[in-house]
Length: 426
Image 1: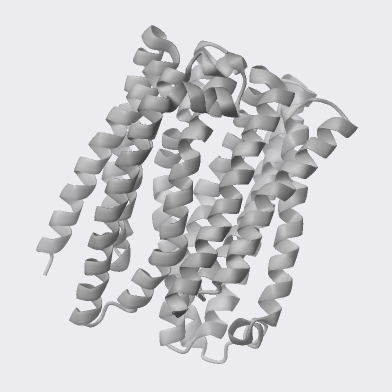
Image 2: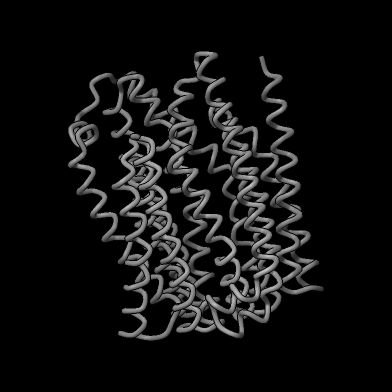
């Protein structure tokens, strides 16, 4: 019964976010147009760059080590380490942003400087919010996590439209609106966190066991760095397509590809989001410290079941995109975007393959061995760059979509190979 309530809240949060995501695409593609939406997509790629290098890994660490620390009775040390990590992350981003924005302003122009500044601000706020969201999910506070996830998408849209109407029809004003919306979500997360019986009483409690505190800090930092090593590949994987199109064609093509790509990604994020918020914490909780054979066996069995179900669902999404792609794109964007609707199913197929591979990497994460996936990610990123550049020159948007799908298939094969080797380690 408890699990039924949990999954209901997770589905509710994902559903509200999905609807908000579709309406955001519809509104902003219409208001900004292909070129303006392209600038927004490039700005979001900068925020995504920061997320991949810093806040994404921090969120993964939050999720992984909550149960670990609770089992070791060291939640105060866990929270203390999390605070230190976020302070360090902010200082890094602030320093880099100043170093980049000043020369961009002088040599490129105010518009790009504002775009980079808005992207950095949004990245910091969204990153902090991600940690709170991961913490709520790790503690299995499904209702709070779901409500904030759903509200965040709508607040971002409301403030983006508000700033565009108040000032000017520019992509960076949309990003500033995104930042304001997520800031309100984050403040609400903090409020509910302090009210949580498990977390609120420990959040500001000083860790007394220095050795234990140092141990959990080292583990979290190492875990974060393992994901950070992947980040360079992730930037190419997630945003290389936008910048290749920008280099070869311009912001209009970036906007069209980004809009269709977001449509393709929305149902996949909806489904994978449910998996991540509901199943992933249970898998990590089942794995625990992975010091017992029963923990590993139970965790791996649950992971296998999750992958089978996910493969069936994602294949269904691909079929829908293939047969109804033009109708879907036309409904959610404008006639200019719908002219390129043929790429929708190819993008869905590629993203489906990628997310199945990502689920398979949980085997290594459970065993505290994320580094075994560095080579697969590197090969995927390199193959994508080569394929995307040459295929985009010949086939434009379809070339980029096809390059992504092929590189993700290579990635899946290499992850399977890495997991087999993991099984061979005594």
